[in-house]
Image 1 (cartoon, helix red, strand yellow):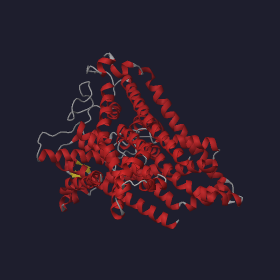
Image 2 (image 1 turned 45 degrees about the vertical axis):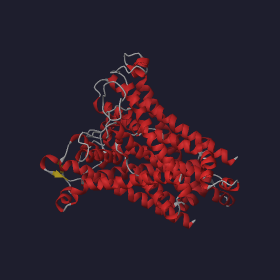
Image 3 (image 1 turned 90 degrees about the vertical axis):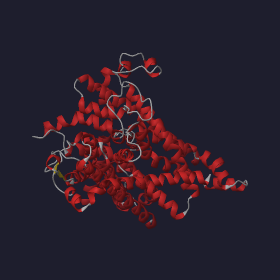
Image 4 (image 1 turned 30 degrees about the vertical axis):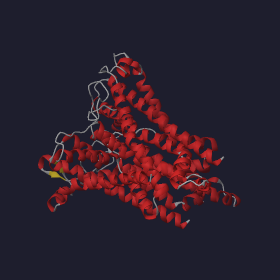
Length: 294
Length: 278
């Protein structure tokens, strides 16, 4: 009798929970679209400036979210330039070269890094600047470079793990292939294993881009500002605008209904950006599974 | 090639160790007898020279615990749905949506919730601003849900394949299979999922910052405002320069880092025990 009741309860809660989760996501997206509909046009992005002037001519956009989008894109590019090569190289090393104890130690440290809250990376970047100021560079300040390095630290574990998983998931015969053809270990890694694992590695890279794009806690301590002169960052030491930080500022400081609508629209733009990156990761992983199962 | 790759791995290792060292170095002034006593205190009132961060420790733990109290049962129920209780096609749709949820930025949840929830909470409960432990915990629950579901999902996939035919032969229906076999047999996996979810909730900054009200007091009811350690760091860093208040941000960071590292170690050990037992 008790078992029967438990079964019925489980069926009810599983239906209610699943429908609830779907409802929350659908409601969130619908709400964002509904609240931003009134401002969704080119003016949202560029204000009164013609878009080619803003994108290519360096014209200042004072009433639009383009500077924040440009800041986010440059930030993603800069942090990826650090994290992707470093992550792939470290992942290949762990999977193909490191042995025994050393491999276990690095894997463990990567796990710790993956579990570290992003605000800690921000605090780390901030403290690096503090230390630089006290020692060799009294003028050092937060900016694009510091933010990019800290974001790179945040996404590095995803990149390392993806590379590691992609290599370790390869069929065992593939490891024998190089040796049977008289290749050295490094030749086999470079010419056979990495190309074969490239789709998995790529999905890790795309996932890293998404994580770097969405993070707010890191950049709020390392140089993101509410307005940066209407342009994307011009140098690596510039303060910058970024989409997630813009949304945060609007939440805290909006005065009019229109500003709030711009906040919802910015959230929608960011959601579209990260959701497409994550969907791409998902599709890459799916196709990868199919590739080796066939 | 070995050298290049080895250097990359060494840089990754140095980054993690460097982060620990930095935060320890900057938190160090606090770990003198006097500074420590000042920090481990129940009052945060910088104007009067009180810099206790215990209310924030309680705030962080309370937020994460309440969020998990909601998110964990829901996550298990969603997995039960996906592993046999729900019809095949809806089950697949639910899991796809949970996967997509990992791609929704935290700031998007936080922004939408900061506009919608507080007025509702103000209307539903007497008193307070609506920026509360309860509101922040509900949003955090949504935020950590996909993490928990995906960990349980990967744990259950192997278990499902191994037990499905046996239970079917015994005449169990899918509900009995989940309740009688899957849940009891995956206790270690469920625990790991819980701990990982708790760690994610603890490490979140934006939801806590934008929804919990940030009042540095120990909450007495779910509709009281609280301040999390993560939010404390970002508030202190944006408001103050220098002084003991400033150092408390590093102390908060150090506490967080120790806690989340301990969680990573715990999950790792669980995984080891789980795999050796199977």
